[in-house]
Image (cartoon, rainbow, N blue to C red; front, top):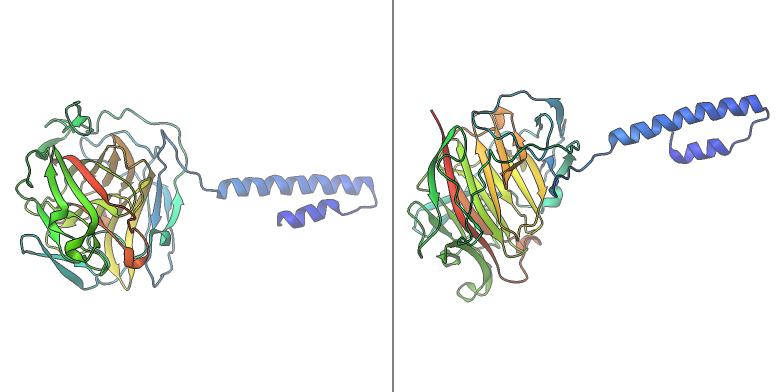
Length: 389
C-alpha cells in the first residue's frame, strides 16, 4: 500500500466505534510493516574517520543485464600471512558479483619515451573507463562503527625532511613480506626500470602523453598536466610505468597527492605483456580531488566490463599512502594504514606478471576530467614487498 493510499484510508469514515477501532489497529500494523521494509531497503554509507566505502558493478554501453549487484553472504576465504586486520569497511568480507564478458576487444598501441610499444586497450589508456563515472551503479556496504589498530599496514616513517612528512617504510614493515623495491625519487632523473609515456592514450583520441611532463626533483616524482605549446596548446599529461620490474603478487605502496581536480590521476597494476585485461587500479580520481575508486577488472567484451569497484571519499590534495596487497585469493586496498576495499573471489584475481604504473589522463573530448588550470600528481616514494616463501 502506498503512503498516499494509506493516508486516504485513515481519513475514511466508519459507522461504528468498534469497527473504527479495529480499522485503526489493523492500519497501524500496516504502517509499522511499511516502516520496517523502508528501513531495510535503504542503503547506508560507511563513515569511519571520514571515508565512505562502497562496492559497484559497472557496464559500459551497450548495457547488459546484471543478475545480482552483490552477494551479501559472508566469505570466509583465508587472508594470506601478514594481511592486516585494520578495515574501514568492517564486518565480514563480502563478495561482489559482476557482469561477465565474452571476449576481449582489440587493443590499440602507443609508444613509450624509449621507443618500445606500450599497448593499451581501446577502452582504456591504461586507466579504467572511456565514459564518465556516472555510469556506475553502486551498492553501499552496511554501516559499522568499529575498526582495529592500523599498525599492521605500512604508512611510512615520520620524517620532517621528506616532502610528505613520511619516509618509506622499513624492509620488514609488512608481516609475512619482505621489501623487494623502494625508491625515494632522489636526484633528477627516473630510477632504473621506469619508463615515461608519450603519444595518444588508447581509447582517448583527445588525450596526449608527453615524456617531458614527467619530472624528478627535490625528492619528488611529478606528473604534470598543462597546455603544452609543443602540442598546439593541448592539455598534455604525464605517465610512466615500472616496466622493468614486473611482479606476480605482492604489496605495493605509493605516497602521493594531487594539486587539484581536473585530470584523472591513477596508480594501477598493468599486465607486463600489455595484453588487457586484467587491470588493478588502487587509487583513481576520475578527475576529482575528493574521491578515489579502486577497480579489479578481469574481462571486457561487447562494451561490457567484468569488474568490481570500491569507492572512498577523501581529500586527495593531502598526502596519503595508498596500497594494494595482491595475493592468489584476495586483493586488499589500503589508504593510510587502513583497508577500504577487498576482493575475495579467486576467479576475478589476476595471476599473471603485472607492473606498477602511475599516470594522469584527460578526457576533454568526452566532456569530463578536463582541467581548467595546470595540475600535478606528486609522488614522494614507492615501496614494494614480496611474500615470504
